[in-house]
Amino acid sequence: MTDIAYEKGAVFLRTIEQAVGRERWDAYLRSYFDRFAFTPQTTAGFLADIRANLFKGDKTLEDKIGLDAWAYQPGLPKNAVHVTSTRFVQIDRAAADFASGSLGPSPIVNNGPLGARDISDWSTQDYQRFLNALPRTLQAEKLAALDNGFKFSSTGNSEIRFAWLMLAIPNRYPPAVASAEQFLTGMGRRKFVQPLFQALQDQGAWGQPIAQRIYRKARPGYHALTVGTVDKILAWKG
Image (cartoon, rainbow, N blue to C red; front, side, top):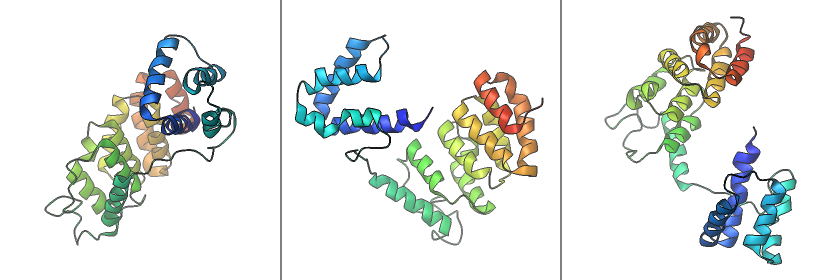
């Protein structure tokens, strides 16, 4: 799997939506799924259906979008619609302020690790963005402040837990070990499992014994594809 389907495909559909309008695009998609329910589809078939049932002979609109360039050429065409988030600008600023220590002498203040910022409406994506925006090297006290303030090591949200562990493990944060073991033995999605075992493996003498111990316990419950992936990462010999 690559980012082509997930990322380029999403931008492609959003570009069409902007060109034709949400109402018209929604109506087309509803009709598309009705026509092709429970049947396979090809790229050529999809483009033919768009031309017949969305463009309906509108050459100007077709040229504006450039279906063939999107489907058959590499990269993103120049007309790609890119979404920008003003909210993420604020999240990035919070991460930068926390990392720099500009919130005060202690990472923990009365309102929590991020000072007086109102984060009551933060979503999963906000927390992911915040954790991923932090420097990859953080002092133990800052990691502890985050963990104590947000309970990242014990959160039941897999996306947030994964982002946290991908920060905490390379910093060899001790509480991350138990959290990683619980996480890796409790679920088997390769999108989480592969990077976390790689992160542990990359930590040499500190992380490799931990990875081997956890994997010995977790391996019987993993899908064969995941086993094949992690076996190679850890040079597993059983």
